Image 1 (cartoon, rainbow, N blue to C red):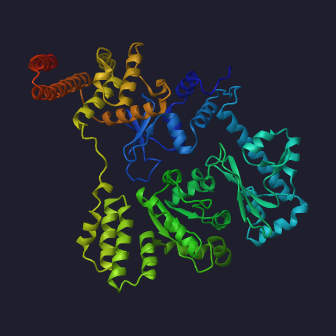
Image 2: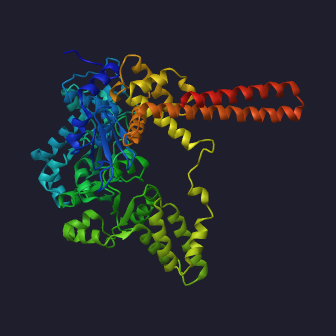
Length: 589
């Protein structure tokens, strides 16, 4: 069996056709037959009524709830949290299609090498911790509440107090020094040749991505070092803003609990998880990013912040306020006793008492309000106004209209302000609530274009209609135009376009477009050929009307300039278009 290069379009098609989307998705989510489709509760958002559909003929999926859609690659990418090449390789392995990287050292090849390097390094650090000579380090971890079994589960290790111990070990494994520098394990010396080990005399914590690959390390000092924690620098495989520590271990528990507990540090996560509170992740000490939000939203919309109890921890909790509210996520705050963090609290009080704290977690806006009234005496009008405006700005970020309404009523009452004044203040910034609209867009025409494309995807006779017309004049959306061109190309081969046959540099976008269009039309009962002809008539008719309107504007300009001859020519053009319009209508009837 021959090997294949990753960027080979033929390989993508072969892998897609060998992996039936229904069979693949059914391995992750149980599917039930629903007519010619299959359906399930969507794995990408929480729902009780199934709105996730899979079409075997087209090899596409679509969720009517969260709008996730695409082909088998899109599903694996989104569910597993991996890039396209990782999804392709995984699906290729599933059906025993061998994949090799090209010899040009492309980005995907480099990533695989760095993953492998970090994985081997993780084993090296872990083995040092298990060595008899490291008994004092294991005692240190036990004092921090970490049992030996726990260090094994999380692959905790130790970097020795040496400038080149890692490099000497790497030579015995024939590991590439440039790769070690690329992933930040070693650092180039400033004044002389060579490198030195970045991590020395530190407890080493592997940072895993959602699929379990080691993408970096967190090193905790075991002495009074000025730098308590040192993380791997960002690389082609590690970006703190795209990483949630512990998600590999906790994602199934987050889905089961429909809630994610967010802590700040590694040891906070270890204590919660080992104590039985397994639906936790750590933010690696960074402010939350949009990508981290997307990662969590795959599993839940409910968040509980459990940061340190000090002022810095409270402020860190509030810094995420905007980004969570704007993404329609429900956030609560766990309030711990002064001087405690989740790690210390669980070691002192146990997981049972921590769960009681979870049950008494405070809504983040209530928490914000509590901090504000501690700093502002609302018995005085000037401070009451200040607090009210601060709360209005927070409520403004809430994307859910229902939740926003609840907050308005609650905080208007707390601040003894008439509710309609709250609403009036919110209404001062209507641009923050209304989505920008393209005034030139005509919804009925867009619908006609989508329906025409749907019929062409489903029926060769309808695809023939596309082949007989100028696609650029039928569609206004770039994705629809490119997809229609591929529909026509498949028609000329005597085939209907399936998800596995969509090609090109924008393949992923076009696959999603195809899934969206197909599922919008999938539950409509219609004569497809008649619907296609009606859509063609509608689109052409509206195009002619638009041309007539544009010529009428030219006539007005010509009148102001006294260009009589030009006016006559433009009037004849309008009459020709009107005759064409009548012919178009008659021909379709």
